[in-house]
Image (cartoon, rainbow, N blue to C red; front, side, top):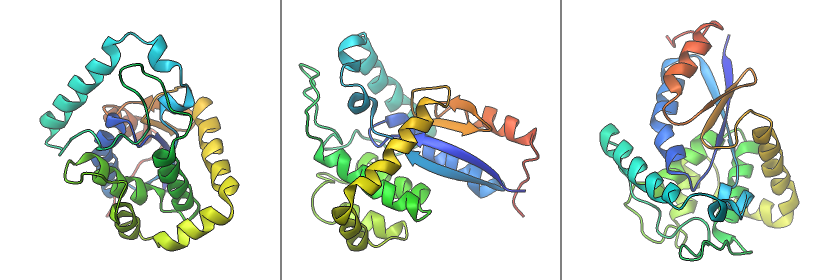
Length: 217
């Protein structure tokens, strides 16, 4: 029996990106499906977060995510530009967020088509691998959408015609994430049990094996 996992994931989170190689190996090696359910970055979900958090937090994330990438041999650079609009001096979050809103609505369109895992994989590599500057211009996202098995123009037309439909998908993801037992990303959820962090896949596999996880032929 194929087992099913929800993955709550953010385009701005370095750890979400760093989780993808392990998540892809999990799907390749075992009879399991991962339902990618992207959520807005924490800074957008809670604009006061960075002002309430110790300033060492952001510096540590940069240090730690960079060394995790180096240790695991994953190409890595923080996106240029940042997926969200934030003044990193004052930590103010801009009221308008066109870059992340575009990505999130496209991700919702992919989710409705059953392609969200492929979509976040393709787009996250454009953002985080360090090969693309100005990822938000030109056809970078359109080409990533195509590689995920979708037609960018078709998705964009549907989103423009009914943006509330796709915002509803995102809101449902965030509601489920809030009820999952953890607020961070990436969070894997199996049978209502949350596994937070890119380094929890081995523990997740252990739990899945207790429920009959099978290797693929």
